[in-house]
Image (tube, rainbow, N blue to C red; front, top):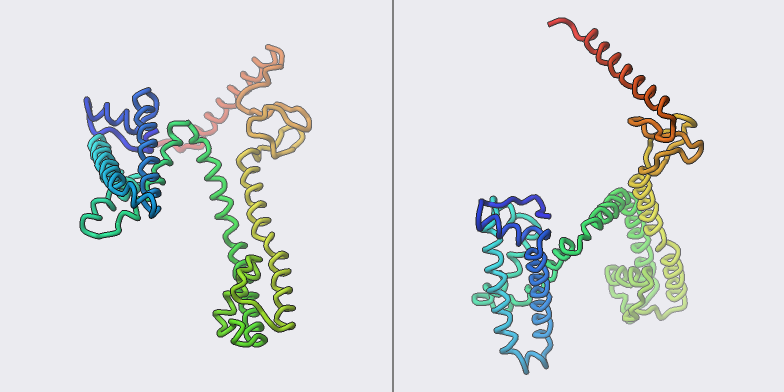
Length: 314
C-alpha cells in the first residue's frame, strides 16, 4: 500500500521503498511497528515535558530524548525521500507535510524559542497503523460518512442559519430585559449567553436575574432541546441513503421488476428469478444452459451485423 508512490530506482532504493512504503514483508511490518512506537514515545515525551513537576525533575532527559527522536525522524524522512521516484510529490502529500512538521519544530527551536509545542502533531503520523493492521477497508466507510456529510451540508447550513436568527432574537430580547449589572452589557455578550443556553451547556457566568428574563431562559433551553435533533436526523438520513446506495443495486428483476437488490444477490428476493444477465442460472439443466449460451452468441452476432450495416462504406 504505497499510496500511489513509486520506487526511485533499482537495488538499494527499491529495497528501501519496499520496507518503508509497503507492509507485505516482515521487514516492512517491523519498520512500521517500530516507527509507530517511536512516534508514540516522542508524543509521550512532549506531553510529560509539559507537566511542570516532571519537567523540573527530568527536563534534561526529555531534552535529549526529543533531540534523539528528531534526528531519527529526520533520517527516516531523508531515506524515505531517497527511495522515491518523485520525492517532491510526497512532500506535497498529507503524510509528507506531517513528516516535515514532525521534525521542523525542534530545528526551529534553535532559532525560535517555544517552537517545541508544535511537536504534538506527530500523533497524526500514527495514521500509518492502518497499513499494518490491514484496516484500509475502513477508509471506504469513512468516505461514506464524508459523502453523507457533503450531501447534508445544505440542509444543515439552513438549520444553522435558522438557529443564528433565533439566537439573535433571543439575545436582543434578553439585552432589553436584563440590567447591565447581570452581565448583559451588549448584544454580542447576550448572543454568547443565548448560544450557551440554547445548546444547554449553561456555564452560569451570565445569569438572568429578572423573572421575565428567567422565563425567556426557559424558552431558550426548551427550544434548544427541541431543535438539537434536527441536524442529527438529517445526517442520519443521508448516512442511511449512502448505505443503501453502497449495498443495494438499482438493477430491476427481469421477472417481476423489483429493484433494490443486494449487490451480491444472485436471485430476486420476490420471485426468485436469476439476476445475473451475463451468465445462465447454474441450476438450469445443461441443455437449457447451452441453449442460453447459443442465444446469447446469436444475439451478439446480430448486433455485430447491425453495426456493420449501419457503418457506411469507407
